[in-house]
Length: 254
Image (cartoon, rainbow, N blue to C red; front, side, top):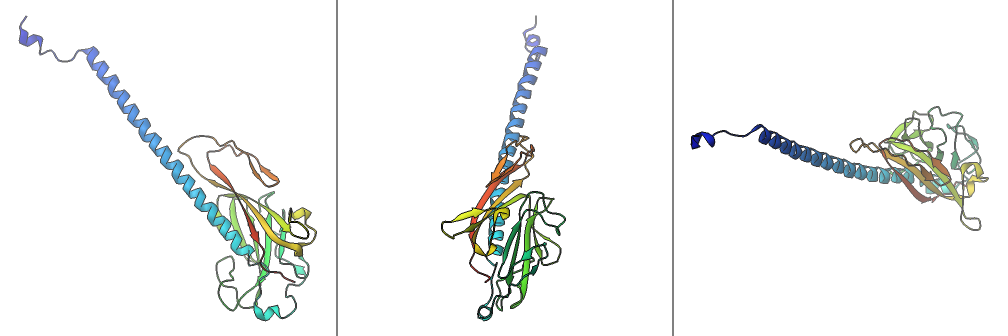
């Protein structure tokens, strides 16, 4: 046989098949590596977004709660401007009361079942800094009321007086509140267990927040506990976190 002809035959079928298998393994390895990087990136991005959202939601709640009972120096010299009456959320105010919690309202139509509702009232200021739900300053000595709650669309919303509710944050799934008094020792009560709303000097906030994550494909089957309330598992792919904070009440309405 001609030696030149012998060495010019090229690859055999078996060699080609082996090369194809090796190539497919390399491509599959690259694919899974890229997918792993994408999942890791999505996980980190979602965790960071959830952390930022948690911080913002707590700070927003703190801002409004600390406005409860505010009145300027001129009004402090007079008797309490916080009289009896019915609030826009269906609350029967007593004299001097500036905070009211509830788990259901006869007036609101979009609140999430079981999630708490918080109603606050305060006076505006001649200087900027006392704000309404839309971020505008409340005018000097104007009696203002806001209602904070989670709606059925998992949004943290804020309602000025009888106005339509404004969305403060998305993907807030539950709000649980406890009300603290220091008559002897500090004790915390649910809204249903409170007997005198003028005794409150602090509020514990509990929020359940979520962040959509679809890249990892893992089912979140965890349940979550906010104080005395247990939230059942949603069995979806969302990340979730529970945030708790205690806010001191700086003002007294009476």
